[in-house]
Image (cartoon, rainbow, N blue to C red):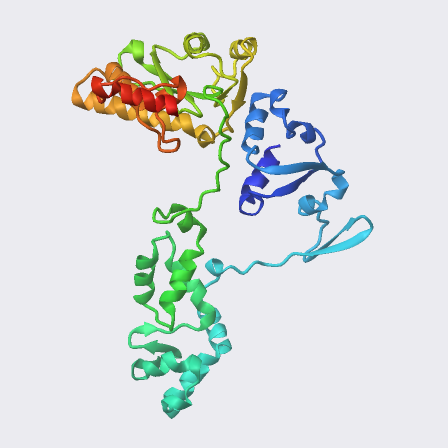
Length: 414
């Protein structure tokens, strides 16, 4: 299973977002990686399987002797260059050759001279240095950059120079760029390093292209605007208080010990926010808070939670089953699956931060902020959570008594 998880993560760029087959010669993985397999696995296997939940794949079992693609390196017979293996009666020949990567190539004199002989531009420049440079119209398009700096080009000990900069043959430029980019210094500093000793046409563009393709630089560049996967919109319930989301905030250092944690509840349709501050978030405390809220507002049909131990415990499952409440769990490591309550958490934390900075009582100020939030029309529904949940407008200091009747009439019309 660990090998499968590593392989999927390694090829994430190619398999993420598509349905693919995961072929293995270990038959128990068919059950372990199937839906519900994490319930019967050990904790370590459950964690590995949880990492694969964001992928869509089908586990397929084959016999070990048929798994030649994955096992070819361990099954190679003794031999220097070639190995032969058999799959379903067909002969497959695998050739093993040296990989010539630019970063591992030498900058030796021998290698330089070999590449110099292969480069037709170097031979042409030497010819023009001896015989004289032709007119502009006689110069091929690819040699125009050299013709423009002809007065600065010379030959010293068989090396073509542009003033004090070396013009390397085209076969050595990738090696030079890879060595100059050691440490992943970035575009500007890599360009400075190369310019200190070398020059060739389109050198800046070559450096830019190499860095744009550098995997390490792409992962560490803070200026990049990475494209996020498109989110699937949450289905909006048809009735208020039929679908709610819940989550925790804390520990809150700015709060007193009896208010160290917060239990947050949000209605998906009306956007009504409930928040209770408690000293701990054990399963018993969570059930007690939910019972109080449900007795006041009624029982919802479904509760959306994350995979916190308090929310998936046996006591919580029994509490929800007893009250005929369904539970939908957000995907592991994806809090955006329960984004509505996460947004409410940010609002409550901001209220606590403002109260602490202003020297006011955080629990009291937060409750006042939540009350104001309930009376504010929502950006999506254009109706306040209070009016949508209660079916009437609420009296507040914002509406004077002589306007109260007008507000009530508007609520009845809606």
